[in-house]
Length: 207
Length: 270
Ligand SMILES: [Zn+2]
Image 1 (spheres, rainbow over the protein chains, first blue to last red):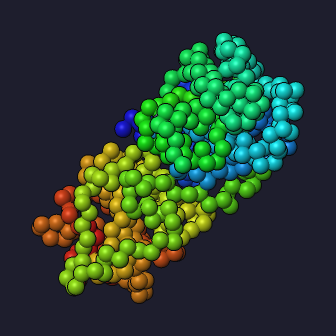
Image 2 (cartoon, protein in one colour):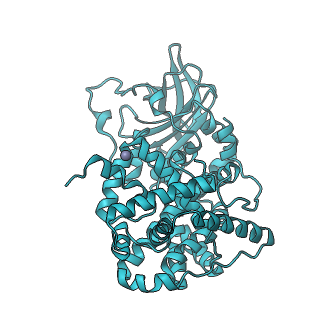
Image 3 (cartoon, chains in turn red, green):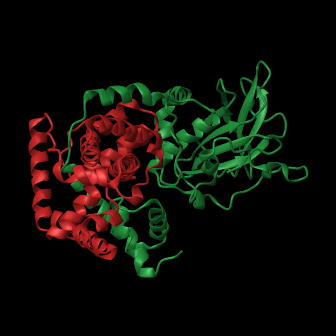
């Protein structure tokens, strides 16, 4: 019953406080998504306010081009609107769902439009510095979160970090990463897995 | 071509960060569906990736929201995917699905096809509301607008609807209406003692007549009120005091309703 009480009534709008995944923020997102599934535009707008920053930031990091990233961001949120009723809370949070969708779309788009070599050329040089939100409290949150992630990325081995960066942030397949780095595919797989596990532990990710 | 077992497990990290090619991705997806260890890993890795994404957070131009606000109201929302738990909405997924033929299989008499028990249709609750909504979309054959309008109409007794949909034992099932080609979608809760029914495919009633809903149990029939008709020809009703009713009856009666059915009603299993 408690679950339902949290899920159905509209809670007063509240700023996203946690970048990571505190449970209350997640409950709120689930409730908003549920109302979105009922066609409620106001709820959808709240979902957008909460998730457009990371969605756009991630898509832009992968695609680099700002206009294309905005286009893909729009597509991603249209999908969230369309599929809201299909979200399954048993399979992870709203954030993970939305960002998985965003990442996949960005990656598929760059893969179909840019050759691996073209991406390789720009990948190293350009990692756009992400701009902070307007709100001061959010800025602080954002900076803290970013610093934490950076700190944890630094704790990976050079090879693990490179592999995580090439795959997640740049959109390489494991195979392309292996070719680029001149190592066997199994090596890349191992680095990626070990890197993600180390990151998870360092960030204190709880599922 | 199939990979050795350890190789398949080894695709999970790549799957989590979309670092697989199309064919590998599909193979990984199928494996993860069936491997609890990999599912756990996937959830971990995705949650980790969420943090990597948040570290890149950047505000998009306001125009993105402006465009979304203008376009999404025309984008049809899909009903919940419920193949595992909800046969009724399987039809919902393909909105054109024909009515089940079961209601026409018998030879006379009350053609009531029972369900194997409500329990198996029990769903995760927060999603019932969305499911109900999907049913409405389906039965109204409708546009988002029609749905929104219907939800608004329902919100007049929305407290009751919400109470029903939120009750922990509420079930949802799709049942044929005997002696007709109509299909009923039934939400029922024994604990809340309430039932909501949405019926599609009933012939329109003549002027001055309507469909009355009845509770059918061992001791006979009790009125559960008149069904309301929407513009789309869908009838719906909601009633409390379900008691130990085993079936719903539907009969055509004068618009004001009758104390007893004037003829044997069509039946819907509860
Ligand atoms: Zn596995």
